[in-house]
Image (cartoon, rainbow over all chains, first blue to last red; front, side, top):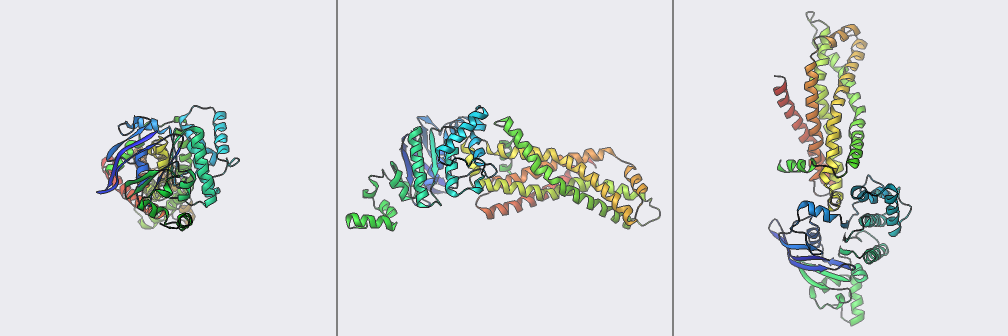
Length: 255
Length: 240
């Protein structure tokens, strides 16, 4: 479990996160949603330690991440997998070398064991036989899958995904969502996904945290989000005409 | 300035895995060093030839022995061209390569990705580049002197400004071995600047492709200025 307690972050005097607290349970997909610029990426980066929160504390399974030394944080990060918005695959390495990279850096596996792990990861994200291709030679959806495969290579306890569906068609986006959810359950990872894609929320939002202007505005799940009664959240959700029409068809009232 | 030294502090730490570091080092020696041999040879041959002609045409005095043409070409190559001028040229080639590579990795979050894996990104990416360039620069200097002298030997007699014997006598006359030591020291310092300054500009770039391009330009300009400044300081300290 990851716990964020009273996180506040400022940039140049502007408060970007205001006193946010949340718990993210293992074995379920935890989504942080909000408009662009609402602070969700900053929150994710604070949890990861890429930004230092001005106030507040982060706990990873009870371990106080905020007070850890650089060395302790470095060790903890080996339990973390991350899927970046653009994939962040290493351009100069092939698909296989990208997935093998964390194994080379942090394990004493034999070459055979590393190869088996790479093949397993590629199989698991359903892109076998792409080992020798380079990131520039595969589609955006496949790059995301490779990024997921690399993220799970070391069998992480915590998985972070920053807008994993951006730039993908709805069908591929759903496949990626379902893949992340099934991996989360399979490996009992604590998964936090940053998104503003409502399809993802409806598909895999077992826990949803809505951030608005740097504040926690609502917390719930995909089952309760459409009937939250929270005006700011409804403005966010029903800005999408499809959802507005669905709501209208369901209740006769688009708002 | 502070950030530059902070970055160097991160760079000069023990590598995570020595095997991977050595592999990276050889890759960088090939990419940054061996791939520069061609341009070094071409520039040196031409400059050696041009310098020989220039010296011959500017020293048209019967009191000067013609051996001075070989001597002048040799000393100019050793003291300034093959160390300083070549460093300025390679700052453009190698420096922009380093800034754009690291800068692109930065803006596409590849560096964040390394950090999240628990890898010291500065150490992993920059240390092999600095070591490779510092290692290869003295060899490029020696290669440049050799091919510069060869260029003079080919061009001088071909255009008839000096004979082969006079030229060879000139390059053997009053040779000061310390000049080589002096220029090798300069090459080491310039190699460090050519790798570390562009790496700094790439590592701290923010934005997108446009900013990476701007950072490359800034890196080359800054490196060139620093090379000239250190040339002045080292010449004053080691020769005067």
